[in-house]
Image 1 (cartoon, rainbow, N blue to C red):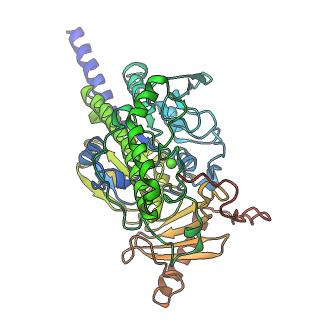
Image 2: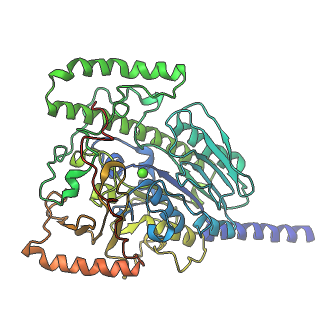
Length: 521
Ligand code: CA
């Protein structure tokens, strides 16, 4: 009898503790990619690709349609997510900076609350990851094939290992191995599962090298944009499909780090296609060459996304098979959006919609209603706060975003943000996109290229492709004044310092066509 009552107490305690876990400390699986835009994710846009596995997250959960990044470039976005703070406060304003890992980050706070934390895949913050029980990350940007990676943890210094294979598959295998074999099943986990793909230069995996060969991807309406009716910045970048894709980008030359077998498979896929193009190129019009480059570029990008989608499917299947699905918050996002030929571009950086907006999907059974959509203005600034709130950890007052947990529950607070501040710093820099900051309320957008002393104002409802700035026009004088006041308010609210004056010559634009111009493909 005594044994029986002890047994009952034990059962009740075990039951209570698992109830506590379920209610207070869900597992968190953060699935992250680099440069993946909504135009290549079928939950948002199914005109180019089907991504059935990523769509599972949307179908079982919530799709956010206005997730804006604070600074649309790789490293800075990651630093914002670690800290819940804008770039000017976390100190990582542009690629090439080194993240100060000694500062407060959400993984450290989650560890303190009993979570086991891990990051596997692309890190790209230069300094060694801190706050993770385990890390196994690409060295820097990382190649698409045969990546060196550094693994370590709280106590262990990083040790480098080499790998053979396709990076997307390797990162997925490592994430699954950690989930299956390494983590402590007694603790809730927070895993950042972070792909390099589909970052430039879009090298597909062996499985998809010939996928899409026989289809034509639709062209965006702005593929031949002439950059008129806007500030001078749009015309002066170096990120056009027409001029700035290199022979490596276009797969006219093979990657240099493939092993003999990989190279054979690669050449088998591209050699004939390349010969066909090169034999016709001299007789093609300029427009036809751009159209060919567009197809080559976008197909390779989509091929990379396809492998990401497969990898997500395998990890979601594992959660389901292990009974972890019910108590795991799964988030999918990317570090920013991307241009799939819109405005004639590849790359990101701008406050224009395609790169300002990033995908955000969230699935949490019992909390998020399946198949829901949320149009509120949310941000990568909110991710840290969301993870902490979901875990029942107090959100520090100096974090600048807001928890999305109420939105997950369908209870968007009445005072939720109705405008958003953006700031891009990386000029001079890759692709020569001028520094700018701005504000959007979701229907209008004001952008200030402050070193050029030029402005743009877009009416996103009348001009969703942002082709005609209405800045300085009488019809929009009221909106312009309203957004300028809002910009001032947000800069104060987010503690943005007055921008340093440029050093003499620092922001002079390099003359076009001289140093650094890549050989035309
Ligand atoms: Ca990126």
